[in-house]
Image 1 (cartoon, rainbow, N blue to C red):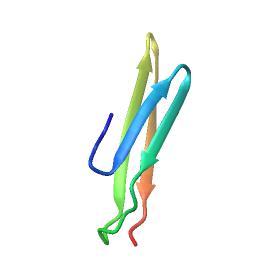
Image 2 (cartoon, rainbow, N blue to C red):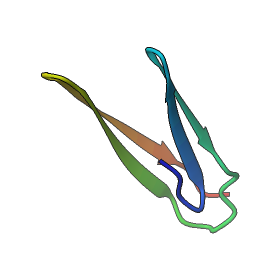
Image 3 (cartoon, one colour):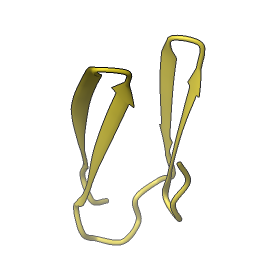
Image 4 (cartoon, rainbow, N blue to C red):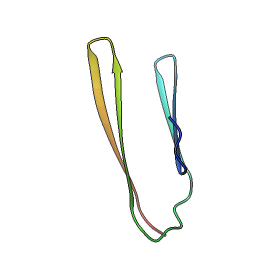
Length: 50
């Protein structure tokens, strides 16, 4: 998954999420839902504003 300010990638059983610096003045929120077979989980991220 790639957005203008975040990137998520899965390699094997490892999830890596990278965020660009937030210089917008507004807090950013990201919900990432991961599934595999009958297993699922949601991760919530908040990036504060500079």
